[in-house]
Amino acid sequence: MAIAFIFPGQGSQAVGMGAELAKTYPSARAVFDEVDAALGQKLSDIMFNGPLETLTLTENAQPALMAVSLAVMRVLEHDKGFRLADKVKYVAGHSLGEYSALAAAGALSVADAARLLKTRGRAMQDAVPVGQGAMAALLGVGKDAAEKLAAEAAQGEVCQLANDNEPTQAVISGAKGAIDRAAGLAKAHGVRRFMPLNVSAPFHCAL
Image (cartoon, rainbow, N blue to C red; front, top):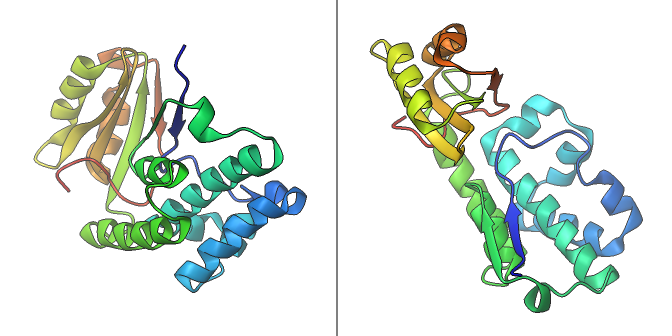
């Protein structure tokens, strides 16, 4: 049996993430310190104490989620004796999680991954100012239903399938007005639950 580690993308950030790890394990604290030094900012303070609005900004959320992912990996390897190279055959990630996966596998240093994600996050946020775009997860439907819902909700604005997660979950992305309209149309398209995502830009779409 092959073991794979899949690292999370934006939307999974929360104030306080990593704080307990940092208090308990020096190896985790070292990752947060390394990221802070690489970026020249106290990103760890934003992660541990908020506010959520600042953490959710793309340029902060991306390196922050990578930092937590790599802190967990350091604890597994340095404190729990779990060697990634010996135990895990594949690493992958959702969006920014690809960078976490590369750093976990040793293809990127933690510092380089942090700087790349800061730059990536700024570029993505510059493309669409905060508040103009949105994303939502659709539970209970797959790719085809999501595309039909997005097409109906668009009404001249961008609204597209962003992620085909699995046969009963998809994500749409686009202009905030279009995503808001999709919320009102979701039930008619078979969506069991419409979940707006906690992101500051509409990723994985034409915007």
